[in-house]
Image (cartoon, rainbow over all chains, first blue to last red; front, side):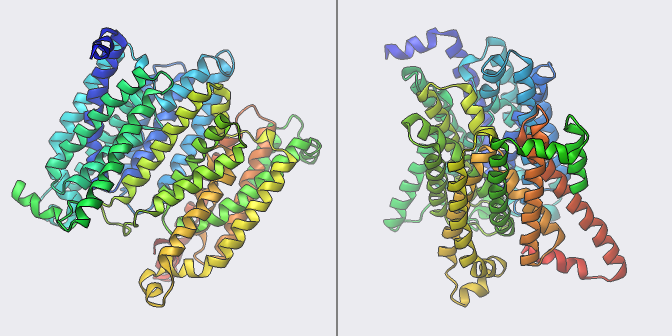
Length: 300
Length: 312
């Protein structure tokens, strides 16, 4: 109990918990929509673009966030322009982001050679971008992250209802006059911003976990989209707090591992839980794709 | 592609005599080993990658590729051979992903992609943990992630060749039924092709390939060698044998030219591998677009037949 008070006595920890909570809500909401739309691979691609964008900014000596958000949003818009949907052509995205990652390797080497050699500050920031540095957030950065995440949350809440509709039944949604194309573009932009802000928390390589694991768990626990989406946000926040606390008490554990580890454990737990309930013969609340659309017109 | 690579080598070399440059490069034993290991990785990545692209399992392939990083990090932390770690990590992840049934292509809302994403992020997070526990050096982290082709020993080359031979023989043995099951799953199942077993076996093969290739390119850039030559080849032809040969040829050209250019450059080899691969893919896609356009004006229906197998 006293340990909890100690945690909040450190300003860098209040920054981490504050920014971490809002980032977790944003990734939980956006992640649920991402999993529902079957576009997790786009999150994977964006995580690598985030790395390259941030390192490009460092290599050229501009603000890191400029490259991070610029790269992510540009790539997200590119996905939207290509009209990418899940399962259409993964190899285009795959080839593209593999090349972007190669560029990232180049920027990493340019940046590390320009700043006092390997293992110097250059190497450290490269690894920080990859694996996150939530405990190193300054007050100003934390406030920036909170504002950006709140914008993402507002955006996700605004488009959630029509987006769920179009994701589950595009043909009917289009005939009802829902702007499918605009929604898809808007969602990609939202995803790009989310990738940028989550990179600050858990790092470019791990943000996929914060997008996929709480969403996957929520989808297993509830087939009702508007309950599950908030469940995903809740699981993400709980993972963030638990992970940060574990990292605080066990210094050898990087905070990013704590956060992703807890989220993964929760997801694994839902497999055990639905496995048990299914064996008992009750209707398992897994996301049977056929069951979801029924709830949508009623909820709308 | 070849002329492009040749030009780049010529420009990057300190002399403009290409043959002389290559001879000087191959006088160094570590470069010879790099070329040998690169060839093994290219061939293996191109063949297995061709099936990966055909099966639309890019996301799985990418995940299996990056999970070799925690495997290697754990092996270094525990003080065992990193090679063992690479393979253990990738094969373990392949088996975990095999537990989840595949979502039919094009259907949203499946659990498969959420599981794959979680496996990938958790594995990378575990890698960060092992590195932190080891208390090691940042150089080794970037080495594991982005590769270092300069330190391949003779013994490693032999090990790479042996593993590649085993993987390729397995692949050849299951190539026909796997192709059948991929292109027409329902008919294959009706004919008694063990689809599920083949799917699991292919994931393990893919994991072994990722582990093998990542020892050369680093965990993050394996994917370039898996996806790019294969995707380029499938843009050019839908015929399996021709496509596989094309894929292997492209892979070899990409890796060897990248190694050659990187030798005379200060930029990392991974950058050249992915850039040359992407250039090959773009060239193939552009060729297909123009060829398809011509074919459409001459004779309708031919292009849809070319694209048919790649999208099946």
